[in-house]
Image 1 (cartoon, rainbow, N blue to C red):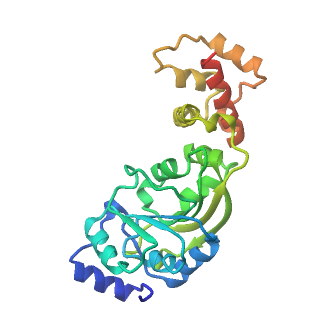
Image 2: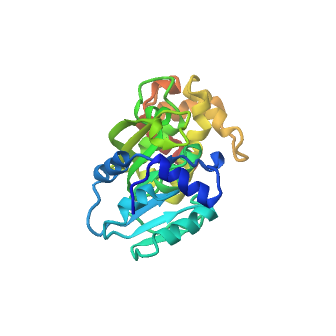
Image 3: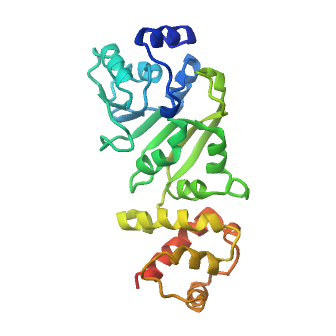
Length: 285
């Protein structure tokens, strides 16, 4: 098996009679050093199972199958799935699935190593990492998203994904990756991020109901990050059919919990996570 390069990728897609599908985020890795770096930085351990999302033409998979670890790879494209099935037919440790990762019931895994489709980074994070026991990850993602994940103190970058990601995961390392290491060349800048589960996890996030509320809460309040907390919570609750809380009720809730009625943007991720827990308790007592 040869390391992928641009010439080989062009030859393969011509033989398959396909064109890279932008809607599926098909930007194929053509740089062997990037693939090697991902494997090295992921620090694969004995007996760890690995998830690969969107293996494409198998540039990363080539490296992964050299380890004895069990690998679960999900490829939505039927043509590429057939190609991968033939290419890696001799490897018993590779389990290929022709499924949409967002709809699939994913096999249990300890580590995610993937050049994920950039257009669905948020949904993939929610499906794979926003759980009670998230895996470690070595991922190539859009650099602007990487900046939002790890820059908590910048108003422009402070967003929904900043808060949700930091509730479950933390940064270990971040590397800029040249977009010219892929074919076709994406228009966006890219980063390799090494992430691991955050410990300890906020109590609210340990239950399915609590996690669902947290994700709904953050999605509902972050568009109003420049508003004071009384208004932020009011806006969040106004679509709730059970809503019967006045501004005074919300002010009393903040006072009882010693929360200052500041703008939401003045809170950091941890404070918003804790606020969501207290609002959850407030609504369920």
